[in-house]
Length: 252
Image 1 (cartoon, rainbow, N blue to C red):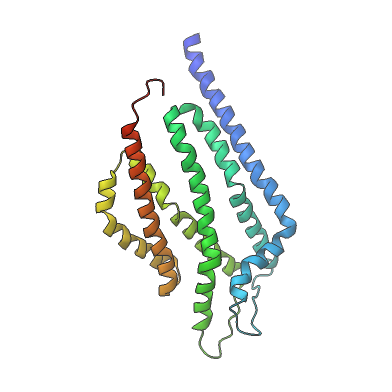
Image 2 (image 1 turned 90 degrees about the vertical axis):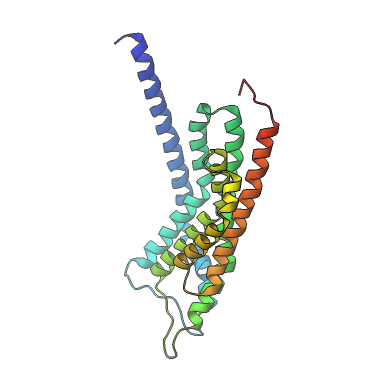
């Protein structure tokens, strides 16, 4: 094998080694946060259960059906919280690996998109916890038939809440998705504006599938998605105009 063949191979091995190092750092960050949260797992679960406990009838309580669920449910929640809390570090490691291969103007656009995606995901989870969960559990406990004791299993409650967190967290990423689609040139702002009616219908369909069968919680997911879609259109339009006004940089 000559030196010309060895150079690409060495370059590939170097990229793989760097990728492994970045992944190890990301995993280590999640594990460190997870280990730090383990002693507080029970307290974290108590905070998560507060929206339901405040809506339970007097004398009702949460139950643990499985023998090991009092241990595994808080640990599972602690790992989820650690993953979400360490997400900026994980994304930074991903960015540090990808950024050298991007042009300068691409880096300038990618940085705010990464930061915005993390902040919007956090905003979606916060919105779900403080606004959606009290409404959902108020509705669900209020429609319980007379004589039925509402006592939710802690593992099933955790699964239900995590699904809502993920649904609202990813739904709040709509502006980032819109901006990326426009910047990549896959669609134009005008095409997205013309598709607004379909997007609204899709938002309500997604809300109907993800949320419990009450109109209020469905509206609380669908309406923010529609508003965030409009926000994405506004930002995309501003970026397109900015790119049109800025002359091409040969050194970019």
